[in-house]
Image (cartoon, rainbow, N blue to C red; front, top):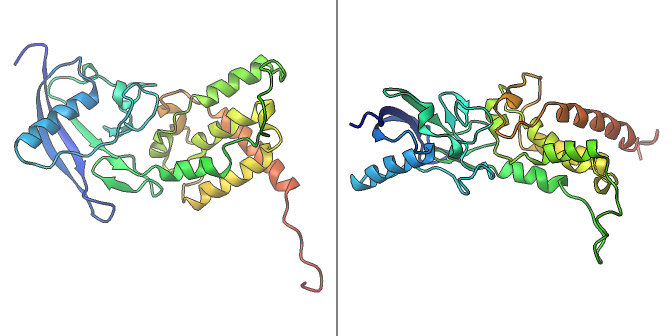
Length: 262
């Protein structure tokens, strides 16, 4: 073994399908370069498994540039691993020491059923977006970019919220499996801009209703979500969304039944 490589013990979650109970299996990762990314290390393990005729580990990934969030794994109990503001695909093996034991699991939440091994179904988050994460724009030629002036403070906050990549780390870290940080970021990136004002309150109402339907948990301000967010989305977005939700509940009350029961 080169003095610059590492030998590691990996405890990896294996699960055939959502109906399977699943279990941990132990693998040895030898001669791992510290310059490898975490996913490259798993690729090496999979190549060895394929060579032995063993089914490789299923994991989800796409861009490998930290902008899609599909790579999300729970590494030693922390979504995306030990480094702050780093997605799994940007985590490098220099963050671990020779001889370390690394436990690797999928993001765990009722709303994130396991497809296989380390791959989960994040469709619940997409359905939340579909419930209201858009603006209704009239057809026709686009307006001039300067026709709707946006205060810099609002623009900066909206851009901060828009940095959310929808990876689900906030859900995986939350003891309640709440999606409030994700949802509030998607609400803020539209609600802070002029184009998002006409549907601001109905958007909050509809997206929260969908979140509840997907069986995400409630937010109780543990703040674990902010701590593990790879893009640094702040809790203040949740506070802003809660204020809008209260306004929505007041302004959009369901009609009362008449005294005659009609």
